[in-house]
Image 1 (cartoon, rainbow, N blue to C red):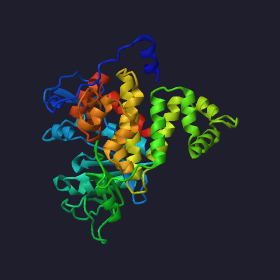
Image 2: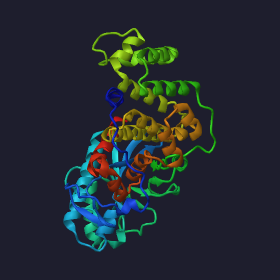
Image 3: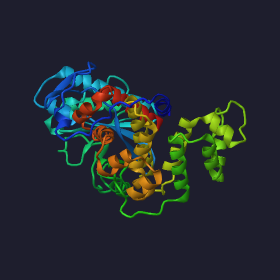
Image 4: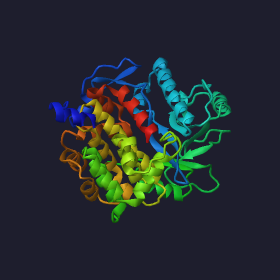
Length: 425
């Protein structure tokens, strides 16, 4: 909202947005190293390899987010293939396990997949809440040493598994098996972290997966669209009023037009710690106390929870709020006049799957500006680059992400934003 006010008062021209990249540019753009860790060359430019972060939420059989995936990039695997750069590997693993420990401290487990030869012989700290899938077990030159390494990590609290097609190691059984298809009941517990979409995620959970994770592609639509609930349309209209800085009286009138929404807002603010012992009894007071930024974040939370019950609901809600917060923060860094509109663009990218509606209806109901609609529908225009950066972080494609992140302060800054967005959502 601040940039909108500055623009209206002083005619401030926003900074140029991120240009939508070509596929070639994503890997050939030159940029300077960040100076925060080892880098490697990838098609003409250095890529920071020690930047790691959560990529996607992992959902359990109850439909709750129970963990997050931490990815070891293909760039690092390629860099380490055939090289004994132990300093680079140690730096990356330290960053990886440090990020995973922070995730566990926030109440979730942390999952990663590593080549077995990379696993340190002893964990540096307690590894409770770490779920580690190993690949290339047969490539470990000393099976006896592998036995000792796995025993040390399990004593530290780690859960160790590997893919279903891994060559069996004599005397070793996995705590879980990574698979995309159901295993027989006699097999160890199986998980499915790399599914292509939410339909596959829900199918895996129905077939007995302990937990699963999936991509949520920007622009995805449900196989069968449903009617948009009237209450959801009301929240969308309210969000637009808040983002457009409409008069407070109009916002109050919109809230009062929904009795249930009015009651929920007052209950939210009158809950312990929100109003310091003062009971609010009017919507005017509630709007004034909460403030517009906090209000549209709260309304957004209500909107994403309006989707029909389904096992993938939690991951869709989390993805929608993460994208919304991430895009809004990007917009603030880029000095967009109304970064809140980018917040709505992030929400809208997931609403079709979340509310089971078409993208056309989501765009129509959200009344997004032309730049957002152009980016979401056609992946074109000056805002398409923001979506490309979000996608690169989600895949993850760190070479593309670092090139795209350069105008916004670099990849380290974007990963820090991403961690904040996950925590806030």
